[in-house]
Amino acid sequence: MSSVRPSSAALLAPGASAQAVYAPGAPSPQRLPAVDDTILREDERSEILNGQVYRTMGAEAPHAMAHFDIPKVLGSCLAEGYEGAVDMLSRVDQKSEFAPDVSIFPRERDAEGHRKVDEVALEIIDTTRLGEITRKAGKLAARGVRRIFVLDVTDRSVREWDHGSSTWTALPETFVLADRSLVQPVPLAAFLDDLLADDTVARALLARNNSVLQRALGEAETRGEARGEARGHVVELARLFSRRLRRELTASEHGTFAARLEELGAERMGDVVLDLDGAALAGWLADPKAR
Image (tube, rainbow, N blue to C red; front, side):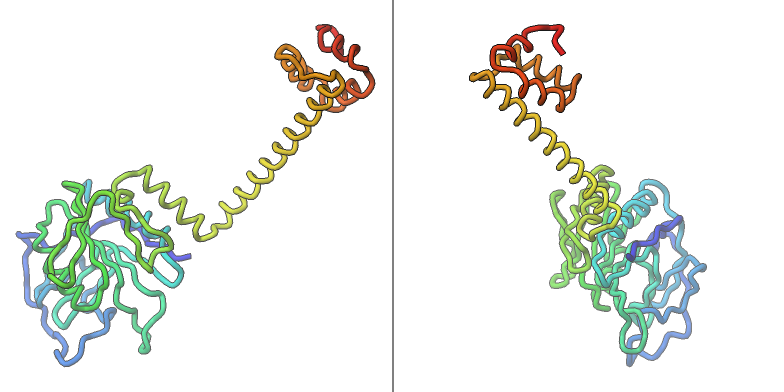
């Protein structure tokens, strides 16, 4: 099973005060480089946008908290054949490479052995301006990313990139993300609600036939069947008491029956109803000392 790898440091998109320098050595524009043909080292904490290198910074709460929680939900919901990653650098064109906060991409490599383009990308913002993420979204869309989302933890809003209009579409709080890369739909509210996140993860594990959960459910079903069988025996025993008495048990007799069944056990109660006639059985139920 593949899962999104948590990150201890979330990266922000270039801020207004970020210092930019030209990135030399861009390849020929005739052919797009492979998405994993990156220039930057993973430890540089930088991104390149339109030929400029932007130094990235660590995030503060609540950005960093969302950066930890969202991969937990999406990682559990990945469909077979997909991988997930956090802060993974991707080459989007000749002069740009950056790392979406969360990426979902096919596990299968392309014909040349390179990683395939992300199918889903999600960015988290708080103090970062939406315009800066918009420039990234346009390049991700041009590279072939199917679905692009931005979560603003400041106002708890989620937007999806509209490829047709090249703008963001605000999504309602009740929106549920259904996608071929996910084993089951994910409520967007699960990104911001811990209880709903846990429920979503549990449903995903059930949908993926998680062996631990399946075993626990099987054991619970077995216990339930045993309890049902025991209840069936009690009902049948009570029916025999009624038949011997030739009437229904009174409320008081029902109470005595239940108390003595618990105290004496089903075997003794069975002996009583078989050994005594109706009158003696009524007397046995009425006698507080009878055993």
